[in-house]
Image: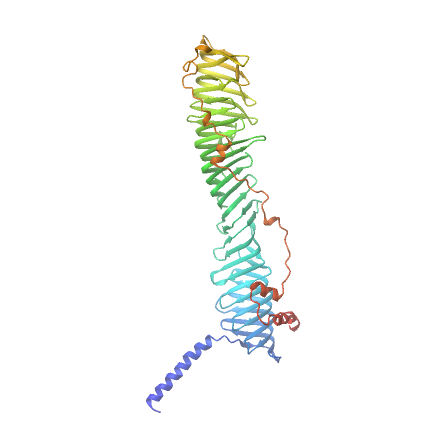
Length: 555
């Protein structure tokens, strides 16, 4: 043999050795490693007892098998187990079909798919070893160290540790139960994401609902809801995007936030807000609004920022409002720069140029305190530069001013007015409530006025009052009003003003909730129905379905 021919032969042998081994490793042919008994069959080989097959990195075990050598596929009967030698994946079932060309295993009845801490239970599973994707249909259950998830259909993408659950999805863990129709669960970080309607009930009975989906970190116990509501015995919190940290009992809402304190019957609205449930402390800002419910009436208050605290101590139960305060009730309206509402005594403290209106009256002071009793305005205390104006039946303005002033109300109208310090009063004398006679102007350290239907009926003055009467024909602009008089009725807010600031959209308390739907027992579909769902109906499907029906007889 020549040297050239020798070198050529060696190269050819090395080429065959190297690429032959590579081809063998990549071969998609099913191999028979072991079987107790071999029997011939029509178009297939029948193996009985302790069957072991091999396909690339997978070992396949079963009690018996039909091996279609030319088609490179097998039907597996009894105690089927497919075990990957490289990945920690094991699948068991009562029956399976395995295609060596497509690398697809169709497992039926009592299927258990295990990947480390995650186990999937179902009766119908298609597992594509090429893509490492397992698809189940007609009810499946996934169990890991924290959660149990079930649904009618699902896709398990093993390479990315992602499971997508569809239709009648239920997630159960020690802290809560979730229902939805579309959930994506990542098994390693143990996070779940839902799309569409999502309803949750916690172990304490709290309700957490989202209309357009949610995200939940099951280990950190942090929720994020979209168009969501969280409801407890004491409160209800809603927002377009609502974050909830269960461990911290903390909520944060964005867009159309609302917090209802059920005990106090106070509801707060705003663009953004935060709420600490344990402390019962909330802060809302951005076109903020308060709605205080009474039995027969409702008080509305608009502000830029609201802070509410409802702690166990009575002295620490309050509501703070800042900037551009506007409030209105059926017989009450007011404005101020800032406000404090004390829940313990139902008092409202107004600061920085507050103005209050009640039917026919207006009161102004540097600061004032309003007390509400039995859902009605009870009394108002005004401090420093207090000024009260009441209109009579002829629309004249009766006026009083002093250092401090206390007005007492009955059935929504002023009944008495006490002025203490530097008191001044100006009120019109009428004849039969139809004819103006003149003006009474009185200076006194202390003045007490009694009213009926908003008209002064009686006046009591302190020691040595200084007064004079001005006939109607002598009344001019100066004598007809006290210094500092300003009728500011055009600033009086009403419901239209409140609604232009923020008009709450009422919550639909009867909205669809999946927990209200009865549990439905699913019927097992036929193979044809499965293939139709998957959109994979192929020639010969009827024969395969027939083979599947007869599989139990052939075990």
